[in-house]
Amino acid sequence: MKREDACAIYRALAQEYAADDAPRPFIHFETPFESLILTILSAQTTDRAVNEIREPLFSRYPTPEALASADRQDLEAILRKIGLYRTKAKNIRAAASAVVDEFGGEVPSTMEELLTIPGVGRKTANIVLSHAFGIDEGIAVDTHVKRVSRRLGLTDHTDADNIERDLMAVFPREGWGAINYLFIRHGRSICRAQNPACERCVVNSRCRYYRENQARG
Image (cartoon, rainbow, N blue to C red; front, side):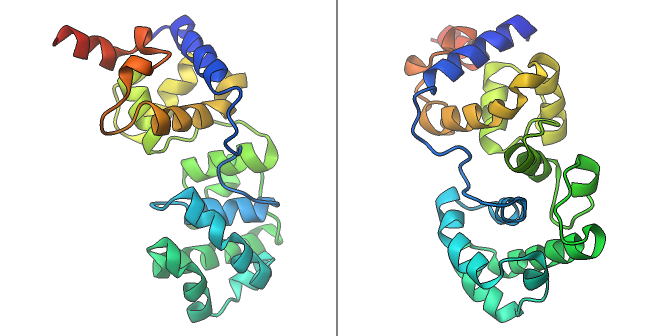
């Protein structure tokens, strides 16, 4: 897709969700440490579930040092509601230990350093950098971003790294931080996995999926 078409999609979605009262970002946090841990925990669960355990988790373990030395069973009990809680308890303790041991208790603010932390891939690193530090190093690709990008024709890839590269190539850097939010909102409200509301989509005229389905009649 040409950059001018991608930018037209961006402008249309930005206008569509300009008055949106959904919280930005979806996960609530107060510090880079909270952003890091909650983003790791958000895998395969809902934002609501993660937001609900934020207060009990950080009231008990407010610092990387405290979380790194958390009692495993106590931590698992706090995380039990969000699924995969045993694995996630292990992962966030390891992440907190890395922040303490490798970065002096401060969450790093570069992609290269974040990727050395256990449980952190490019999606998590992009989210933490953008939300906690205002740094747009790339575009976080989750399930919604992947689906919307492929349907629109912005990418033909199925893996997150190549999808991210395709999106970075067609969207100006100043828009990278908003792409994740806009595509998630659009994926949840219109471009759903099942029964997408194509007739109500503000970018259907530029959508490959819509054109192909029209052609099939």
